[in-house]
Image 1 (tube, one colour):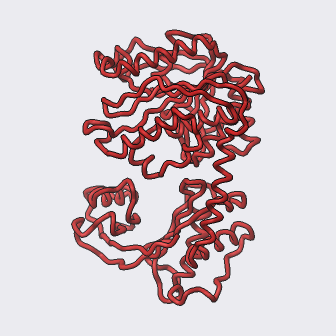
Image 2 (cartoon, rainbow, N blue to C red; image 1 turned 135 degrees about the vertical axis):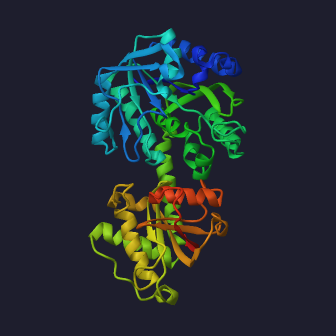
Image 3 (cartoon, rainbow, N blue to C red; image 1 turned 45 degrees about the horizontal axis):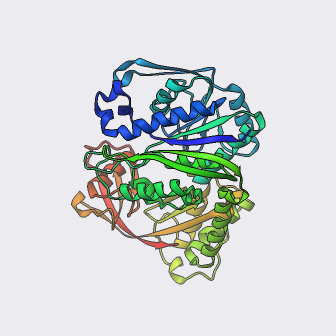
Amino acid sequence: MPIIAGFLVPHPACAIPQVGKGDEDLIFRTVNSMDKVATRIAELKPDTIVMISAHSEAYSDYFQVSDGDVAIGSLAKYDAYDITFRNYYDREFVKSFCALCHSEGISAGIDAENRHYLDHGTMIPLYFINKKYRSYNLVRLGVSGLPLIDHYKLGCVIKKVSNELGKKVVVVASGDLSHCLTGDAPYGFNPVGAKYDTRFNKLISSANFLDLFSFPEEMLEDSKQCCHRVMTILAGTLDKSAVTSSIYSYEGQLGTGLTVAEFSVKEKDDSRAFGDLYLNNELVNVSKKKEHEDKYVSLARHSIETYVTTGRRLRIPSNLPPQMFEGQKGVFITIREKGALRGCLGSAKGLTKNVATEIVTNAMKAATEDPRFNPISKEDLDFLTMSVFVVTGLMEVKSVTDLDPNVYGLVVEYDGKHATLLPGLSTVHTAAEQLALAKRKAGIMQDDKCRLYRFTIEKHE
C-alpha cells in the first residue's frame, strides 16, 4: 500500500504546556497546527508512522535506523518529569527497509551506535500524536552528511517497503526552519534566515520538490535550519505521486521558523520523479562544466579518473602552461559530488617539485584519503566537480589583527600540531572566529600561543 500522507512538523519543546509554562501561548498557531496534525493522523489510522528526526543519531556517511522492540523517552530534561513515551517499533518494516537499502547500495541500517532513548525531535511530535492516536508502530531514523539526493533515495526506499508490506504508512518529518530570525534567536540574527524560510515555504506550498536540490549550500548553512534533509527524505517517500500540499501555519517570533504542513497523496504521477530529474540535470551541468575547465582543474580530474579506474598515477602531460612547472607551491583540491563536499586535501606549503606534480598528488589524496569520506569509486566519477586552489603569498604574521578570513587563508602551528583553513568559508565571519576554528581543527588549546601564517589563493574551477 502506498504512503497515505506526509507531514512536516517542528519540534519546539515550549509547545508543550508543562515545558512552555505560558510560552506556548506565544506560538499558539503552531500548537493548534500540531493538534490538527494529530487529528488527521487519527483519522487516517496508519499501521506505521515513520518518524524522520533531525535530532536522531546522525553520521557523515550513514543513515541510522532505530532497532529493538520498544522506544522509550521522557521530557525530564525540560523538568516535565511526568511526560513519558513508550512506543513499539515496527520490526518487520525495519528489517525489510534495511534489506532493501543494502540491495540498492544505500548506506543505512541498524549497525551504528543505537540509543533507544527517544530524541526531542521525535518526542515533541509524538506528544501531540499520542494524545489522539496510539494504534501504530514506530519507525525512527535520522539524517546524514551524505548528499541530498541520497536522502531522497532513502525516502523512495521507505515508499517501496510500504508498498511491499501492504501497510498504511504515514511519514512525519520533524525539523525546524532557520534558527536566526531575531537577535535573541538560538544563533543570533542573520538576514539569510528569513530568506531561507520564505523560499522553503514557497517550495512547500507548491510541492515542487525539485527545488530542494537547488538551495545554495551557504544558505543552508547560514540559516541554521534543521528541516531541509528531513524534508528531502519525506519528498522521496512521495516520489512519482501527485501531491496536494497545505501549510497549516508558519511562525517565527521566537527566532526559529516553525512550519507545519500536510502532504495529501493522490494518484500516481510519473512526471514527479524528482530524484531522476535532479540526477539527469546534474549530469548535464557537470558535462557543461567540464567543457570550460582550465588546465589546472582538467589535470586534477584526469589524475582522479586515472587513479580510480586503473590504480595508476597519471603521467603529467607536457603541454601544460609553463607556470605549472615553475617552483614549489601549496595546492588544495576540493571535490564535490551532487552538490555535497566529497573530499578536500592539500598543503599550504609545496611538498613536490612543481604545481603540476602537486595537483596530481593531492587530487589522488583528496579522492581516496580524506578520512571524512569513503574513497571515490568509478560510479561516482560522472558526478564530480572540483576546484584547485594554488597557494600564494604564504607568510608568517604576528597577530590576529593581520588576518581577514574573507581575504586570507590561515595556517596554525603549535607543538607539532597544525591545521589549515582556506579563505572565504561561509561559516567564518571574523578573524577571531577563523583562528578559533583553526585551533579546534588542530587540537590546539585556545589559550596556546601558536605560530600563524596567512596566505592568498589562486582559484581554478
